[in-house]
Length: 410
Image 1 (spheres, one colour):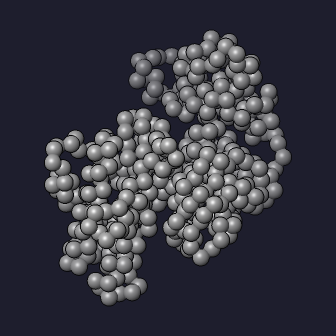
Image 2 (cartoon, one colour; image 1 turned 30 degrees about the vertical axis):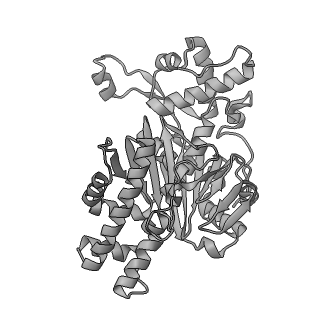
């Protein structure tokens, strides 16, 4: 059904909501008949037809013939019907992740599909914020021509940082940022005008997973790289807490560890440093460690066993507070979990005096996209949200693919 509109809403605002709702319905349900779309919007055929007419004329929606398979499923004979469908390349959304050791960029289309993906090694700790953002924006736009750029409807940027609603970073300890107006810096780095959203990397990761799998109930997300970020989704919505820091179990102090935090015990840097010390290989990296765990090399297995114990302890504490139905592990370090999942389960069982319900623990199957995908999804979500400013114009063709000035080249 359409979003509730207050009686005092202006005709323009009602129209904006209906346009966005129509796009959301087609995104959520795929191809739809005009009658089905009208029902999903809670509008009569005439009012719905006006919205459809605007969207088709502007290039966001087009008509397609009903497939034979669909007619067979619905036990219908005769001529194929006409369905409405999103035009995927009518709009694009860019997502950027600035990590400690890498930059990842993703571009998705109006249907939410990934159209391009790039990742590059980058040491954010030795670069200024401006240098990092400029490099990230350049990587995200590399090779794009103006015909694609002019259909970019927003850029999302994620980082391992404490971010407020204005896109201001108060602290990003792992990469050394403090009191940074990141949204302003990103806006200045873009060679064209577009909405920008700044988000914590773990929160963006959570949103991206919900786009791929949907979300109901309580889900805990752990993004495990050099640091360990956490995010919480409740019925598909981010739970941020009073100050936007909910879910950050990576910063929790571990008893008996000499004052160390979880991320100092289960993060990438901890694993690699322990592995280098055990093997006396100064150039060893995470992939070398994971390979040795697969091959059951004793030194690597011992480190993996300790990691399993620390991760289990962290998850037990989180489960006692949140009681999640599902825990999603992401980031490069998550690749270790499938090899030691049985040990984690044993340690979790030992750490509970009473039998708490066990959540389902899964590893993100597209870890290489990371939170960059979620950052792009945030703009996709904003584009289709009620009252989206993207549809404030009375003439949708002004923001469609047919008209409008090309933005300057990147």
